[in-house]
Image: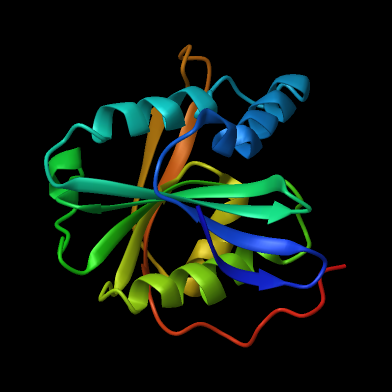
Amino acid sequence: MRIIGNIEDNVNFVLHKSFSSRLFSPIGKYVNWKLENNWDDYNELYHAINYIETSKDIDGIWYEIHTIEKNQEIKGVLTIVGGAVDQLAIDTILDTESTILLKYFHVVEKGKGYGSYWLKSIISPYYFDKGFREIYISSSHTKSFNFYNKIGEEIKTYTKRSDNQLYERTCKTFIIPLGRGEKPLTKTT
């Protein structure tokens, strides 16, 4: 684990090179919220852990898990996957030398600007400096589509069924260019 950025109010942006299920606690909180609010039956926590477990054994694939931690409590998580990403059954042609995948991006404390700042000012410059030029992300969270459209380009729309085939889920895929980021976020309240 390594802190790669921070802002006031004891908020740290942490890079983890190995997987631990506790890192995905924000995903678990989201799944519980969906259950309590009868949202849908897609279990992102199961799929996120399964994704890590199945992709880690594919030759040429690597992943890094990032967290937002406030007072040592995990407030957000995202996974970056790189390497031979063409082996992950992605139907869009990617330049595997310059493209990384963003998977399972969840922030617990909504509306504070953490997610936007994290992606634009921590993740983007970190991977840009490593030679990557774009992030590929597929999402089924309709509330995130507008955000991804503002910072990237939509390249695909499709639907998939929920885990128990109860819901039809709209999904979109975006390409987001990487760069050096924006000015630091100083106000977190």
